[in-house]
Amino acid sequence: MLRLTELTLPLHHADEALPAAICKRLRITPRELIRYVVARRANDARDKTRIQLVYSVDVNVKNEAAVLARFRKDRNVQPTPDTSYKFVTQAPPAGTKRPVVIGAGPCGLFAGLILAQMGFRPIILDRGKVVRERTKDTWGLWRRSVLNPESNVQFGEGGAGTFSDGKLYSRIKDPRHLDRKVLTEFVKAGAPPEILTEAHPHIGTFRLVTMVESLRETIEGLGGEYRFQTRVDGLDIETDANGERHIRGLHLHTGDYLEADRVVMAIGHSARDTFAMLQAAGVHVEAKPFSIGVRIEHPQSWIDRSRFGADAGHPILGAAEYHISHHCRNGRTVYSFCMCPGGTVVAATSEVGRVATNGMSQYSRNERNANSGFVVAIDPARDYPGDPLAGIAFQRHWESLAFVAGGSNYRAPAQRVGDFLAGRPSDSLGSVLPSYRPGVTPTDLSQCLPAFAVEAMREAIPVFGRQIAGYDHPDVVMTGVETRTSSPVRFTRGEDFQSLNTHGLFPAGEGAGYAGGILSASVDGIKVAEAVALSIAA
Ligand code: FAD
Image (cartoon, rainbow, N blue to C red; front, side, top):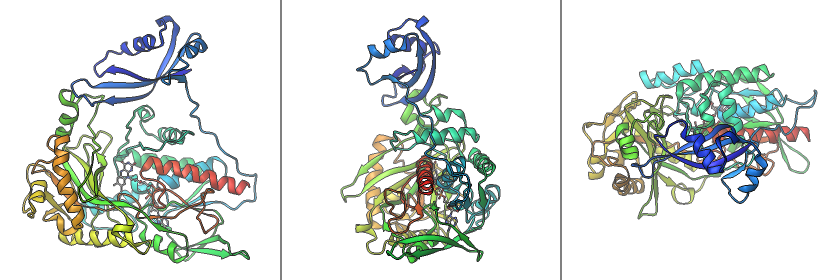
């Protein structure tokens, strides 16, 4: 089979135009085309008056060798790559300790799945609840302003991405196609099959919940074991005669002790108490850059029109997305983050007395507003120097101010863009209604953001308004604060994927500073599971 890439057709093409284009491009007759399947489809809307679909297709042709030889210098006609996943080893018949995975987010789930598929029967611990119970607690904050600090949008089965847009793309380039393994397992677990072909796939919240349950059944069916409402509160570390540190077990908040010499630590970016515990236990940790800002909401129809012109609403295009950035005069970079087309802004705190925002959507992406993080990049040397955990203190400071500015009841502070630009507090909202639950308080967002961020955001809004019509409309609403764009720390690991100074501890995923998003966290889970398996096999 050969793969033909960069095959471009107009958005409104007829079905038969695709095989015709394949034949034309490969210079073959229709009789020589045996079969084709779309491997990927993207849209190119840079010119919105002439939107194009860009296909990659896997093609069976008569006399394939001759066709490939004819195009041997054409990088868009190549043998179809083998994207199937190959296990690096299998568990020995008996006698090894079971590896332990802390965290049932995408990273922990994929670490657990791969270990289970290799026969290692992992134990997966999560501080939060099983996903259906967790859903009730998460809605408890959104509907009734009641936060459960152990079961919420950040903690529990499925991890942080469970109540999300479920965007499944990342910028990682992986010659082993591990992202394909993730997407294939997601489809087996109930994701729509088109995630295998769409360039920008997404799943949405409802399906994620059932997929997480299905993954659990698979892992348990392979001998894995889950323990929910089980928080790891301490590490048992032994130092050998050479001064090397080795993990021997875990102290659980229940008072129990779990023996373990291979531990995957996939705790996400919000386990601040666990970060402190790890630092106190002497595990190597460094501060890492992240970003701070707000969620910004526009009517989705404005984004669609601005991006797709007369083709706005076309079913193939779906709800439009955007990615924008601007380098400001004060040296800061402002950018859009985790855009959720046709979605809602959600309360994403896991700590009492704090407010943090994020976004989610359903598969249909048909809510009234588009929302996106509108954030400013920050870094440790400049903004939170000193202790490796200083970034957490920084986050907490602004999240606490946002809590107070919102009314100290989990409503979030919000402001119209027109007022933000004019430097005056909002006392009411305009035509764009915020979607944040449990509600917002119109106020002055500059009270709960650093001055340099406010300055940069004021510069960027009109710039973005020139790229997306309506972005800077005075009624556009901003809700704050967005502080958890990625982990503020990195638990640095060596080439063997183990902590730089603690053997047997495998920092993984977003919390460890090695992923940003569902797909990259899942891929990191696979890599770490392989490293665990190889270390046991060795
Ligand atoms: P997490 O998913 O954070 O999982 C960590 C798990 O560890 C949690 O379940 C937690 O309960 C558990 N844990 C923590 N400490 C302990 C402890 N001491 N003991 C036991 N268990 C512990 N990304 C995308 O790619 N696309 C999106 O559309 C998207 N939308 C998002 C929307 C929202 C509202 C949020 C909050 C995030 C979104 N993200 C999205 C980001 C994505 O969810 C994360 O990048 C991803 O979940 C990180 O995976 P992880 O497994 O590394 O960590």
